[in-house]
Image (tube, rainbow, N blue to C red):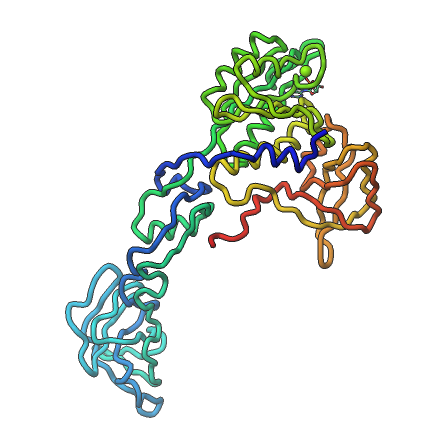
Length: 409
Ligand code: AMP
Ligand code: MG
């Protein structure tokens, strides 16, 4: 049987990055930048004051002391959004407000709380250094500075930088569209009364949530019964998406028609089993340019297999540089058991310890126990037939983090 690593390699082979689109900055948060951003202007564009106070020539204040204050004539006032109406002469000061351009002739600012205003004059009792309280032109960005790289996830600061550089739109990668289909005669909508043998369809909601978390767009195809003709029809609706994800109906039961249905639509299936627990029956293939994942039906199995296989594909399609969740080492706070022969992905809660992390299983690890996912911070990766003794280190896939630690570079 294919290992998780081999299966992932086969899944990712040949997954392209989708095209790009230009989106308004206000809608660009969390999107993946598709082009480098090079500054085309200076930020700030001119020297300006970082305080409310007085712009002056530092040289005029060289002799200022408590006993011999320097008196400067206030020649005018300049506020943010205005420019001084004339040059500053020797022995003069200009009243200046935060963000206002320095009047030409001045080279420093003294904050208002450091001077005494006396009618049309200000008195200084200490010398002021050249450049004091001045934000120099270009100190933040200069033309030619490469400030953002392709593949960067646009966070709030990046949106601010783009705006400061004069962009109202960002060139980003298109988000993959993911059709999600739940299959099974037993499934009804969450708010429907439950008839005999029926259960609420929870996979649609958990999987659409995972699609969104991966930065992609979910398109629910609803619930399909275990009937070949209906499955074919629903999957056909999914063909306008980039990826089709179904859950259930991929085991070897009498009513498991998913494989036949996608094959009748021309799917070329690559594999249908992966050596892991939860989640052995997992089908992957392509329908034309599209990717198809037939996930197992058990709620935990469908989520874990999505994490391990679907998410990296969505990340690659969407232009992300980090495809996988980060892996951390944690110390087992109690024994972590994987009794079966297949490699296990066990739900654990993480706790902060002195100098590291501790991992504790979230209770019953049955593949139908959705609460084990609800409580999980991560998946402990444990080989088959293995017990991790209390105190030993175990690798944990972090479910809460996107692995994007550096804002650029
Ligand atoms: P199957 O793969 O069709 O054998 O389904 C495995 C288990 O997962 C069965 O107990 C199903 O009832 C359950 N299951 C399948 N689909 C869903 C769903 N959409 N929501 C909740 N449970 C499901
Ligand atoms: Mg079924």
